[in-house]
Length: 350
Image (tube, one colour):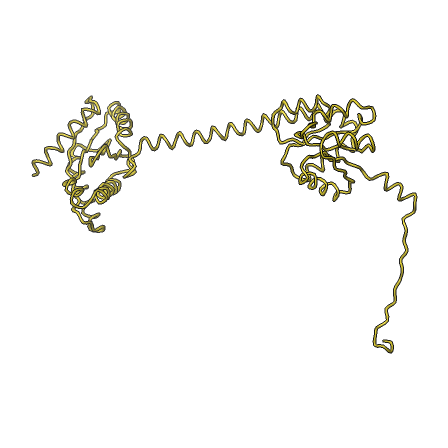
């Protein structure tokens, strides 16, 4: 420390100068790229990407400005947007290829189009390569490096690029078609489900029951099995609606659906066919099944109401019809018989 209390500091001057011949060589090796872009934002973005990679970049706003710069100072590569006012990228390519001085310069066209006609038009105009927007920075730089490094590649690139683009475009269209087909399949399945499902209870509706029931009936008749159809409605349902509201009536219908689901097997067809009317088709039980089913349902209703207090008394009237092995009938006939049986049970309870 000196007398003034200031710490002295020793400095060392490093006067390293790049030899003039090496500087000239470095200058010659810096690749100059002309970016032709009407959008200042897009031009600035490209300039940053390329400059950070070590390239020297000039900007021309439009095709005419680009030609003026090229005549004054040729570059090693041109990257041009296609859509520009006045002279577009296609026309710029054509003029570059008709000028002896600029003809060897490779041109990369940037496009947001996926129409193969645009690619063919660009290749016909003399483009060396295409890059579709939006693109990844590394993808752009890889194309730039390839174009600059391989003269043979530049000569063979147009036909390869055209084929590559068309293949990629066909793949993209195919993927979109497959995705659309998948979505349509899902929508069709959803619509089919909605058309066959009772919205309130989630049970199969009348249309679904007719389809499934008719099929199961014919299969059972061919295999010689018993077929039972239970037909039921909710006792005092009108009074529930009138006295307690339709919302409470809807809840009663949901309760019946829950009871039926729990009382029967997943293989049995349980459906709401309209209003407060429900049906169950059972295949392969014994002859006395209707009596057993009635007791089973009575027990299921009791268990449900004991566990789920409601402002109404849940009760069902049940009718039945059956088809014995070897007997032939129709689903409509079964429904009619079971409905009549239910009506008799409701008005003449034992």
